[in-house]
Each structure stands twice: as structure tokens, then as C-alpha cells.
Length: 328
Image 1 (cartoon, rainbow, N blue to C red):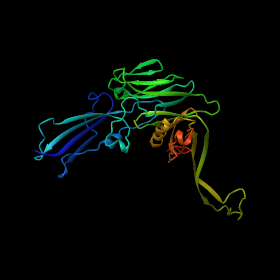
Image 2: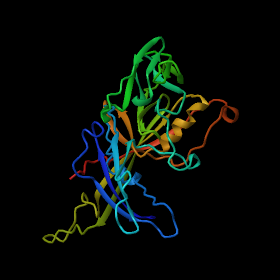
Image 3: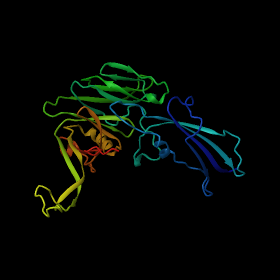
Image 4: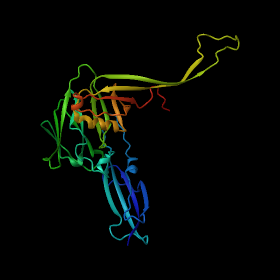
């Protein structure tokens, strides 16, 4: 008999698959087949994303969720099919994305959670390297191996491996510990004049990625306000004081903007800058605090060594909060 409809129970949870599955699903979905179609299609991505609540305070936590979809199929008589009913599908979800040209539901990289093959870090500074634990057996940083374990818990599906200060290369190996999947070159920058700033953003793989900027830094404050005109005449004397203004400001506040320059980078860093521009979650390490920012720059001109010789990107941000605290 033909398929009439399905019932889907969607579970979204932390911890160990099946072990920590909640008693009740987050969503119960009932959908009928369109008569002219032979399949029923459901899009659960946006439903899952509601439960990926990402925050960052220089702590590099793993934001992953187990997704379990229990699907029951019903025939034209509205009776459950007897085979594989319900059918269970399990996934691990990260807050990543694919590009249009990748097609429907692209499988993203399952080892190093970084697109570029280059990282720039200040001299004598440790770094973080994001990996997907299921797909990595070991990392070799210079000549030192780090074995990767996966205990199945969502809190370690994304792991951030420490890059020791002044390291030169990171090599990522498959779970067989022998197949080389990716090599990343680390450039240690000595910047004697400007203060390097660390920008952290959620990249296309749903992982926190650091980008250091090394050159010219400009900070500006844009003030917003409203005003009204008042009567300053004193009734008792029918005079006014010249020390009192006719115009008064109110609802005064401001937004601080930052203009930063990466310094000279290789063309391979175009992908990193692109993902920064497309990120919904960005922070800067500023005056000893991790503060949220929003890219102010809305247009990215891709630079190449052929066209531009030396590549430097200028990036502008607004702090994602008002200067005067008005949180109520």
C-alpha cells in the first residue's frame, strides 16, 4: 500500500546518544504526502538550531547536540506499516552551514574544523585548533603527537587542541593515525609597534575560530541623542539665566566602533575573512575582557597576490552593546 502520512518525534539533547535521550520529544510533527509526490520531505535544520544556544567567554566549549528522529509510517488506511516502524535516524548537529554550490545537505569537513591552511599567532602565544573528534585519530604539532579520544558525549565532539607557543605546523590524521588529512602552517608574528587583538568567531563548521589582527587600530565613538526646546523663564522674576540652555539632550548613548588591520597575510586567508564576515557570533578580546562585536563592514573585496601583491584586510566592527549601560 502507498504511503499516506508520517509522524515524527524529534529529540534534541546533550550527553550520550540514547543514554541521555529525554522522555518526551521537543517536536511532534505530523505530515501528509502530497498526492502528486511519492515522498514526504521534512526540514528540521531550523528546528534544531533553536536549541544551539551559543555563548563564548574565552572558554571554547563544544556546542553540539544529538538529534534523534523517530519516524512512523502510515498507509492509505491510516494504519502503521509493519516493517521498521518506527524507524530511527540519529545525527550529531553543529551550528554550521554549506554554500549554495555545495548542494542539498552537504556533508561538511569531519576532521579539522577550519578552512584555511594557515594560522597567524603572536610570538610566545598559545593558540587553539578546532577538530571534530569523531574523525581524527591524532594531531602532530611540529614533532609532538596528541591522541584524540571520543567518548560519545556532545561536550567533547568539538575539541580545541592547544597549540604551544611558537609552533610551526599542525598535521591532522584520520582515525587510523596514518592517513594525513590536513596540514596547517603556523606563522608566529613579532609585532613591536601595535597591539595584536584576538577575534573569535563561529565559522562555517560551527566551531570557534581565532583570527589575530596585528596592525593599525582605530577606535571611534558614534553618539546618538534626541533633544527638545524648553522654556527657561522664571515666573517669579520674568527673567531667564544665560547659564541655562534652551535646548536639552535626552536619550543620549553611543556605539563604539573599531577599525583593525590584519597585517600582511597569504591569499589562503580569504576563506577565513569570508567566514568572519558571514558569522552571526563574533567576539574580541579587548582590555582583558571578551566582548561581543558585529562586523560593520558589509562588503568584502577578495584580495589576491596577483592583483594586490601584499594582502592586508581592513575590518570594521561595532561593539554589540551601547556605550552607556541601559540593560534593564
